Image 1 (tube, rainbow, N blue to C red):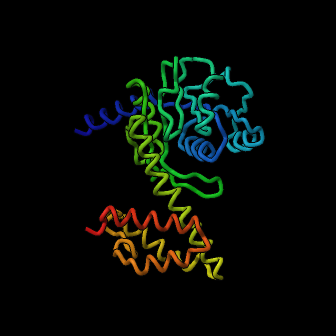
Image 2 (image 1 turned 45 degrees about the vertical axis):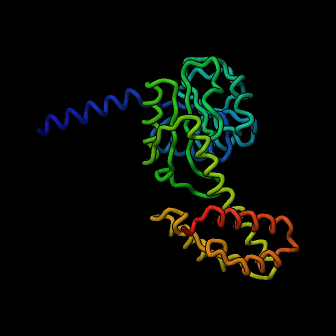
Image 3 (image 1 turned 120 degrees about the vertical axis):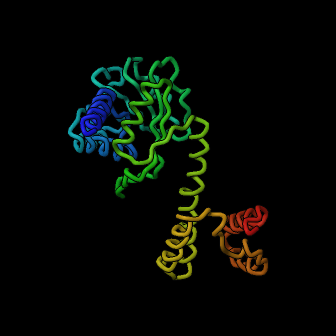
Length: 275
């Protein structure tokens, strides 16, 4: 029994090593590229080269990873995988400058489809669902990574690559990934902006944003084990129109905030989250 288990594990290990991608080229040196490249290297992969439109950022990242900087995108032969990690609106521009080769190529965008890889034979998407900032540490083990590939062999390789750094790996098509990205904008980007508004209101009235931090913490704790709609609180869910009216009157000096408050309150009421 022990021998059989050992052989199974050994065969699985060999299969993994065969599919494993070791040499990786990064196109881009922004927040996502900074963390992803470093995490991949820490988990046994070799970052062989970096290209970036920012020479300064390329130097910083290359120094961190101890790898080469390349100045031309048409000379990427010494690699097993090309990862494009640039702003969404320049992916096509950058892609057009990379010569067609046998090396698999992926991008890291949530909203850009796999159809941008025209005339390519081996392509896909490697999308981490996370907000990245060079000054804030990220735990990649808890970061979901979404995979898409145009063939089964690359799909297997990307899954293995993702599982080497994350415990949450998912196969999603371009449409699903786009909808996920929209949902992420609502839940993360818009939520953070709402907190910025809260801080502005408090600062204008000589109060600290720290007063809200326990409430914010509790809000996110509640959704760990409950659907967000089931733990909605506030004047709108109670349909407390007198309080809503009073709040809107207090926001008279902030026309844009008054509009935001009114629209979100009406959306909560009209969707009957309290039923």
